[in-house]
Image (cartoon, rainbow, N blue to C red; front, side):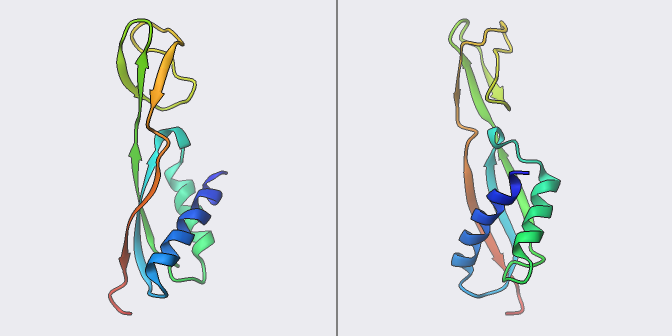
Length: 113
């Protein structure tokens, strides 16, 4: 479950930005090529944040698609896998762009500091 590794990195960034203040919500942009499973991410974040400033914080996941462009027929579309093939002609000769993002977009601090 690679979500734990991602959450450890996310939590480090959250803790730096929170500077000791309690966090109630975290918004993360993740590219689809990371193949993150939302419930697994929620569970992993809850486990790695236990006892810290982000304990019990909600996680909003924003999935960012990868773009797949076929070098054979020119078709463009979204891709969710690094082993994508063209949806237009089935060719494996495609160029992927994006979809590998991992960004802490925002944190929401708890009202009762």
